[in-house]
Length: 454
Image (tube, rainbow, N blue to C red; front, side, top):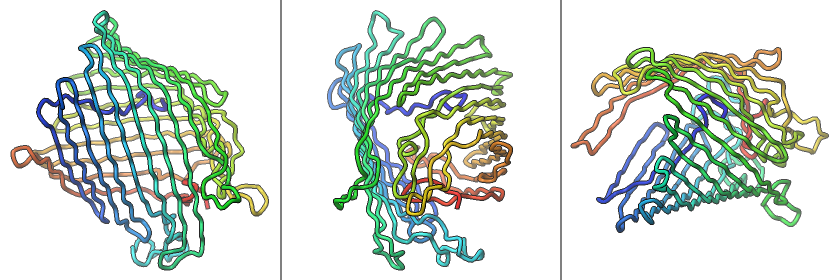
């Protein structure tokens, strides 16, 4: 809930397909990037549906040691037990392999830094493999005694294994040999309710989650897996209320209570939208929310990162407002001004520990202020689609003006988009680009998966 728009929920789609439904989508871009996605959905019997799909994504990369390959398989079952009760289950499996070069070496001559053959990368060997399972089982009920309420109870289980390797087995090796595994898993129970009460839409729920993860350096027995396993149990309750105050004014309010590692926080916010005229809307909102440190921030990632922080949360204060037009029109736009304050932020700094210890550490930084303006526009002329946007951003840390993010960024593209072959082919092809002002970037450490100021 770090935005005035509330929390974003990604929900698996439940289909009812008396006749088979399927799709195949393919997209490609520069440097060997391609995506192939296929899906099929069919009712096996009355009230029993199965939906399955597969996704494959590849990229060759612009520079050395940047290849990537990812597979994802998904399946979802839904069974209508009665007119009031549905049972559902799903499994999503992801497997990725990604080369990690750590960026371009600063020793590369300026004229060669954008040359894919001459640019020298920081690491020619390192890569990661990630294997992840996500399982859900649940029941959804819409009882006739209260047809305006939908109750859902979901049990979920996820497991993630990351294998990092730097094995000096490529051309021009860096003479470093390192193998490290990181394993984590989490499971929980979530109860939600969607209810229409008079003219107010209410979404509320409670959740309990238990997480297990490994911390500390691998043992001395030759194991490549991080040290001891620790865990935590977290609790949360949340609610969101939507109401149309009039034909031209709508408002939302939301809140969330969360308990994490002996810390308790309450986050809340509200937003509203005023329809000025047909297709033109004035909107705004504000929120106060908390972000708890991740397990990595609490425990570090040996042998690169240590940690000096406790479980105390960051405090995020956000206010935003703007003007937008309705989507689906020939021309649509959105203009937003925002102001975010982050108190007690988690930052990465060079360690003050003696030589031989981790070179960097998670620490607490000064209050950060981020403010700016973001705008976007889209113009559709028949089969021609033009899109563009720009953002101005100022970052202040304490009394200092930050330079780790560009002040100005711009993006734009021109596309041909239409439905062909009897509307069986939805084709979008074109080009896009972006530009940004100068800034001082950070180096990326592929083992710790963090950005450092080098």
